[in-house]
Amino acid sequence: MCDTFAIGKTWASEGNPIFAKNSDREPDEAHVISVVPRKEYVHPETLACTYVTVPQAGRTNAVLLFKPYWIWGAEMGVNEKGVVIGNEALFTKVKPEKKPGLIGMDLLRIALERADTAGEAVDIIIDHLQRYGQGGACGFRDKNFSYMNSYLLMDRDDILVLETVGRDYAVRHTNDGAIISNRITIADDWDRSSLERGFDFRMFSDVLITFFSGSNQRRRHVASSIRSRPQGVCVQDVFEILRSHKGAYPFQGLNLNHDVCMHAADPFIRRSQTTGALVVELDSSSGFRIFATAGSSPCLTPFKPILPCCLPDRVDQGGPEYGSNSFWWRHEAFRIHAIMRLSRVRDAILEEIRDLEGRYCKDIPMYKWASRDGELMRASHEAFLRASMLDTKWLQKMKRIDKDPHPMHNTFWSMIAKRGGIPLS
Image (cartoon, rainbow, N blue to C red; front, side):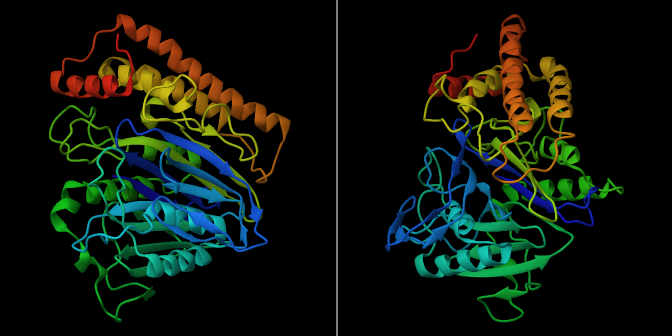
C-alpha cells in the first residue's frame, strides 16, 4: 500500500510544485537509492528489465531512483530534466497477464530514463504498456502478489495521473495537484483513454481488496491535511503528512491500513510497511530540492537532503538480510527495536527528528542536478551521519526500556527481525 501526491504551484507556499510519496512494501524488503548516469547508445541495444527485454533508446537521462533492491525498476524517482514519477498498486477485476511483461516499476524507470517532460513520460508508459503488457510477480517474498498500476507524474509545469488496467489506460491532467493511492481515481472524467468516451474507469476496480487496502481513508486524510493549510503547503508540511497516522499507535484498535505512514502488524491484513519516502521540490528554472528518508517509517527517521552527484555512503546497498554495509538495514535494526517500544520512545525521537530536519532541510537552497557545491554536499552527508548517530544512540537506550505490552504485535516483529538476521535485545 502506498500514497503519492503532488502539490501544484497554487497550493505551494513558495509557489514551487512539490512531489511526495511513501513506498509501502513488505516489511523486510530493503529499499535502496541509486543514480544512473545519462548515456548515449550508438548501436541498437537491448534493455533487460525485471522479467522481459525491450529495445534500448538511443539516449537516456540521468535518473535518481528509489527502489526495492531486487527489482530493475523503481517505486519512485526523478530525472535530470525535472520529471518526477511515483506508482501505486491497483487492485482490479482484470488480472495481470500470465506471460511475463513489464511490471509497473519497470515502466516508471523506462519513462524517467527517456522522457524530458511529464507528458512525454505518459506517452512512453502507454507505448510500452500496449506493446509488452504488464505482468510478473511484484512481491519480494510473496511471488503470488501482482497488480495493475497507477502513476502520478510531475514536472515544472504539469501534473498528470495515469491509471492502467491490463493494456488499457486513462489519463487526467491537473494544475492544482493530485492524490493517488491504491484505488482507481479516474471515473469518466479522463482527458484521454484507450476506451470509448464516457467509460467509467472505476468499473475495473476490485471493490473488496480495494476496501481492505484502506486507500480511501488515506487519500481523504492527505486531502484534508492539504486543505488545512490555507497559507499553502511547504516541504516541512509534506514531511508531516507522510509521517501521519490515523491512530496513536499501530497496535491499537482495528486499523485496516489507514495510516499514511504505514506500519506492518500482521501477516494477513496489515502486511505493508513504509520502507522509504521521497519528497521533491522543483523551481521554475532548473533547480531541485530532493529529500529522502532512505529508511523505513518516516515517523522514526528524518528526511535528509540528497544531491544526485554525490549520494551519501551506503544508501545504495541492500540485500535479503541485515548487513552493516547497508544504510537501510542499519536503520532497520534501530526501527524494529523502536516499534516494539513505540509508546515509550516515539515522542522523544520525533523531537530529535524534527530538529534535524530544521537544521538540514528547512533552509537548504535550490540546486542544479549536477551541483557539487561543497557546503551543500557537507550538509547532505552530515544529515545522514547525524541520523545514523540518532539511531545508534537510541538503540543503546532501548536496551534499558521495556517493550510495549502488545504480545501479538511484538511476536510479529520478532519474527521479522529473526528472518532478517537482526538480533533483538
